[in-house]
Length: 271
Image (cartoon, rainbow, N blue to C red):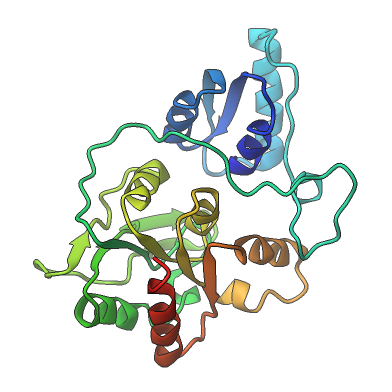
């Protein structure tokens, strides 16, 4: 969605949006932007396929007869209009990285001198597909640095194919230097608001590693095992190249503790 919106921001027009998705807070985000007029949010259920969504959206277009809906585009990998410096440049294509944005108002109060730590993204992979050092990394960040660590994540997620995955880190009691917000963020809009109040981000390869580029918020991205070894799958290589861009610093899933600490110490000097 943000790829599409980044393209829209290159134009001087104001837009009406028909948003087909699951997260009502994205609609709220769009309503806050200066170049958006009206947003119609059409939710879909988890098990619907992209094809079913497209048919449903077309039917809504016909039923409501909204004259302002001039074009409806289903974005797939081969239709992306943005490119990357490491890929062959095509005529009339632009590299779009950042756009001006406004986040919906929120009540999150983050302590000064904070880093956002998002160790797992369990909507598309299980916790076991992430860096096994994440518990050790969290312990070192909290007890071995002077940063306040803001920990976020979903407590549980029930994937259609992978089943239920629970957040694997058990945090009990008050820990000095740790602000535990696991299970307390309702949507990624909350996460983006929190990220904007932090000095930097430590995350895995997920939408936060895209947002860090869009918002120019420095991030250490510890790749999941799928992107550490993406083989020949075009989509995986494309996504990995996308996040391998300033201000992100990438580490492989199988990095060692020394590699993480060395990378972190160099990175924090840039904040």
